[in-house]
Length: 405
Figure (cartoon, rainbow, N blue to C red):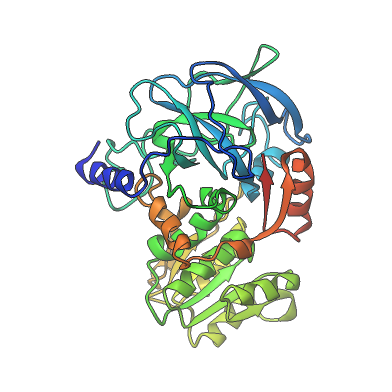
């Protein structure tokens, strides 16, 4: 592990000491577990194939192997990526059967051999981008990506889940749609044990991706002008980050005007519906921002919108940050001459946040009331109603639905 990373991890361990008992029933009662080293049978939402409803079934979860951690997931929420891969994806993108979910929080039930920075009872957030601490990326301040643990590989060579003797695959290093999950210890962020886990789970993706994009990737300066394309959870989290940094103008763009009230409550200063204008939306934004915004964020996953966001920025100074994921075969259409205007485009994953060493500080910002989280939770349901949660997300009336396991 690099010296910088090791020092950060040690500091996090000092901030959040070991919790000696495990509280799992959601009512404040302490329930010690004696399951270390044993196979656990629990509920999980199984995806037997793409474009199929999830099925709540009993699965067997193996004990963690060397350098792995088994976590009791207490809360998980749905992200658009879960919809993308489960409803719009196919077997070329994800092996089936599998357990989806990558935005969750819970308590460590047991650890495998060699794990020293995480202990039983720690409150944690599983990470879909790990931080090994040893690779060139982890040692660099230029990226939060990790050469060993990234979004496109599973965290174990052999699945730790099985059902009726059949292996069940992991998803994005995490698989939080299960009462227990096994992840690599480098894909776990230890957080303040006082943090409400029903709020902490949102830091597993949406909040961190948006806020991090504003704070880390764009590094917005006070007084900057910002345009956000797509006012879902990630887009509104970008607005939260821009608000924290003191942006003078935050323009929100969406074709669903029902989102505008929530957007303005979360710091968006002006909302625009492209359908209300005859001009291309980039021209409308350019006029409203006196030549283009300093920063634009594409939070939809649409290559046409990305080009609009790019042209909405100020020539010579503008930066466009791509956050939305488009899994279609479409390519970005951009003429090289467009780049000679001085505008730049950069993509970000997980908001540029290093999971193990930087995510705990974002959680602390929430605990200090610097980052708002409650406003993003529009629905709460029991785990058994997970398919209803998918319906709410598809209806467009839901920012985040927290499932209680």
